[in-house]
Amino acid sequence: MTNARITLVRDFTLGEVPRRLFGSFVEHMGRCVYTGIFEPGHPEADEKGFRQDVLKLVKELGPTVVRYPGGNFVSGYNWEDGVGPVDKRPRRLDGAWHTVESNAFGLHEFVDWSRLAGTEIMEAVNLGTRGVDAARELVEYSNHPGGTYLSDLRKQNGSAEPFDIKLWCLGNELDGPWQIGHKTAHEYGRLAQEAGKAMRFVDPDIELVAVGSSHSSMPTFGEWEHTVLTHAYDEVDYVSLHAYYQEDDGDVKSFLATAVDMDYFIESVVSTVDAVRAAGKHSKHVNLSFDEWNVWYQRGLDTDDQPHNVSKGWREHPRLIEDAYNVTDAIVVGTLLNSLLRHGDRVKIANQAQLVNVIAPIRSEENGPAWRQSIFWPFARMAELARGQILRASVDSDKYESAKFGDVDVVDVSATWDEDNGRVALFVANRGLDESADVDVSLSGFVCGRVSRAEVLRVPNGKDRFATNTLESGEQVGLSPLAGVTVTGSRLRFTLPALCWAVIEVEVTRA
Ligand code: AHR
Image (cartoon, rainbow, N blue to C red; front, side, top):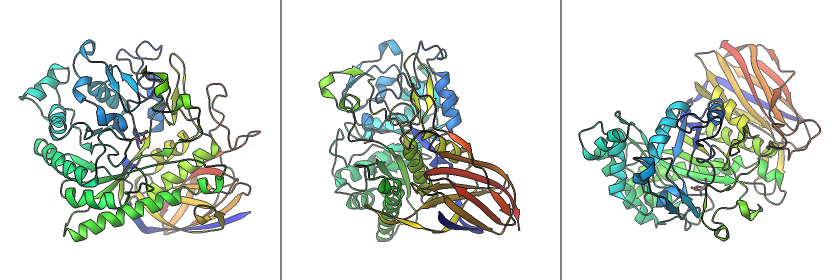
């Protein structure tokens, strides 16, 4: 049996939960848009072609903000191709994913879909093949009320009211040699500065995200952020981070400890950003936008499913990277969300990549059903329950040894306190493969009442940690009640089964 003691103190908080931490991402890639959120003619599609079965699952998942339209795709995209009468929109080659883009879905469709989904839009501009002009024109088209060529064009195209998009990404992964329009940090830093300035001349109220590193293992990591921000610090509000993780060669212990890498990545970027702030004598703080993160099995998959599969020719919305997630992946996703929440004082936006089909919590089949993957559950529960203040957690846990990260806490946790509804929520993982964990939580400054939620995601009966939710298997991985949570005064005790992720929510009053 593993033991962990967690101490939470009512007034020891990290600040308000940034609700934009529970963001997602829709890219024109594979089947995320086409046959994902949008499939005219599907029995569940509405008159605009939006799949209502998928939309229902999106609402249940609860993303607060959705990044669009890419991703690598945006670095070769002309936003003008996706507006105006659908039958006049050009079909184009998308070099990023070696596919044909029909442009049947574009900006207006995404705005309409976002309104139905109740999600904020995070729009990326193309700073790969395009630049300042296309970026500022897209802001004018989207946000200017009217009386100019571009804002009137938006009206003519069916939207009298401005879209009022607040959050803008200044390109995507331009540090990566795979990116169309890959740049050096100096080239990108200057471009981001000038594009950001021109976009703000059109709408001073927008928030801007500069491209950071595509992964902490990039050779330019650190130097890239430093150089880019040295140029663009005054213009931008956030710098981005991207990270994808997978289980390598059966090293499950390191995989389960992946959040240690995310912690390192975030803390390193915070240090770099703050060093530029000090050196430049800036008063404002630039925060972090972790706008692509997830588990993604980039190696070892059937090549048919891989991006850039040139041998297959130019296809329209082929199946690309439709990873089937297992129990272990869901637990890792829960700990990654814990890492994001524990850094909520600086990470203000995060987007799980992606929303449907492409490395996604939701899957759908063309002309067929939609369903939840295992990773759906930690996201859905945290998006629902992580509200109010982030509580700093002091954790005294037994440890295990991992090849990549050394000694790691077996029990991983994050916690929030919502004073409005009088509840503390704990999101907790047992990374132990074989042993259950006894967890003792002290909630100093609170008197605990009823346990309002106690659920666990674990290996289903008769299955192993590789169990997945597929079209054939159905949803075999999900949440079940966690029995035996006891409350005494300001103490909470429970036992977590081996290899699980759990949520426990308790009603509290001030002591
Ligand atoms: O999410 C899939 C891809 O991963 C995105 O297009 C790109 O930004 C990243 O490399």
